[in-house]
Image (cartoon, rainbow, N blue to C red):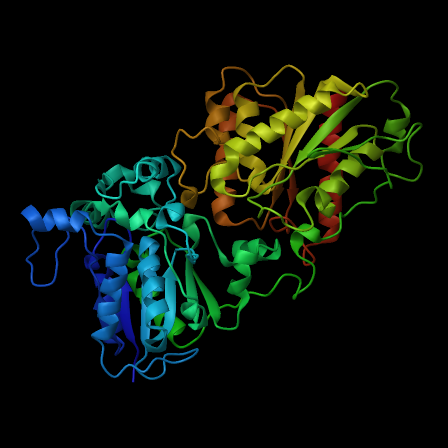
Length: 544
C-alpha cells in the first residue's frame, strides 16, 4: 500500500498551493490530504471559495499555534488504517509534510501522534526547537519587529498582512515560480494570525523518534553541503540532523517548490516516504571538517598576543628565515602595517575550537606576519543572520584597538573577510577611511542570500554599498573558488559587475577547482598558489 501524505502549507497560504503536487502524488497511487489552517480569509471545510465574514472571521484571527496543531492532529485522526512505521511508511503510514511555517504545527502534531506518523518532511524549513516560537524562524528581520512589539505588550491577537505581489521575496526566493502562479499566490494570500507566530512550540520529545526528511531549495540559499558545514561547526542543536532516521534532498528552485516544480517535489516526497535521501555525517566522522583543514602554506611559529576578542601576531625582528616573504619582513623598521582577518559565519555561540583558533584564520595571520605585517584575527558575535549589526560593531572596535597599538602603523590597514563575513564589507565600502589601504575577501558572500530575510536596502549588502558609495573604494582583492555554490557565486558576479561600473581596482585570484572554504578534496597546489598570490597582493597595496 502507498503512504498517506498530509500536506500543511506555510505563511499566508492555504491548501491550494499543494494542488499540482497532490495531483502527481495521487497519480502515483498515494492518498493525499491537503490542510488549510485556520485564519481569516481562508476557505474552511464546507465553505465556498469566498472568505468568511463577521464573527467567524474574528475568531479565525485569534487562531494560534495550538489551533493549528489541533487541526493537523484532526487530519491525522481522520486517516484510517495507517499504523505508522520506522524509517519507511509502514504500509499506509502517514507522512506529514510542512512547508515554511507549516513545519511548526506538523512537528507539534507529530509529537502528539508519534505512533501514527511514519515520517516528517520539512520543505525548505528548519527543524523547530522546543520552547521557541515560530516568529524566530521568520526570515524577514524587519517583519520580526512587528509581532515582537505585540508580544512585549502581552498581545497575541491581530494579524500580519499578507505580502503584495512584489513582496514575496521578503519571505523567500520566488525562483522558478511563473508569473501566473505568482499572481494566483498573491490573489489567494490571507493574513497570518499573530498568535500562530508568538506562541512557543511545546514538545515532549516523542517526535524526535519519528524519521525526518529535509527538502532544501538551493535557490533560496541553503544546500546539503552548507548544512553539513554547519553541523561540522559543532552546534549541539544540529547534531540531531546526523541521526540514522534523518535524510535530505535538494531541489534547484526557490522557496515555493510546490509552485515552481510540483512534479519534482512529488517525486522527492515519494522517495522520502521510502526512506531514501542523503544522510549527514557527525562532526569529524568523514575526515577533517573544512574549517579545520591545515593552512596550505608554511608559517612561522610566532607567539600569539591575545587581547579580548583580538589576537595579534607580530613579525620577528629581522624576519623569519626559511619562510616565504621573509625578505619583506627584514626591510621593515618601526610600526608595521596590519592585516585584520575576519572570520565568516554564522558560527554557533560556544563553538569549539573558536574561529580565531581555526587553522585557516590563524594561518593567514601568521603567514602575513612572516612577511612583515602585523597579522590580526578578530572573533565576532555573528551567531545568526540577525547578528550582522552586532558583528560589525565587534569588528569596528577591534580595528580601533589594532590602530591604537604603537607597534602598528595605523595609517596602513587592510581588512580581509571570509565567507559569510562578506556582508561586513559593506560598511567599509560605503565610507572607506583614508587609512584603509585594501579590502580583501576569500570565497565571500557579497549580498544577502534569499533565505536571510534582508531587504534590498539592507545595510549589509556589499554589491549595493559599492554601487552607491559616494567615493572610490580602496583597492580590492578577491579570492574566488571555481566550485562555489551557484547562489553565492551569483553574489560575487554581481559585485564584480558593480566594481566594473565604478571602475574600481579589483585583483581577482582564482582557485579553479576549489570549493567554498576548501577542504581535503581540493587541489592543494591551487590553494597554495592562490593564497600566496592574494596575500602578496594585499601586502603590495599596504606598501604602496
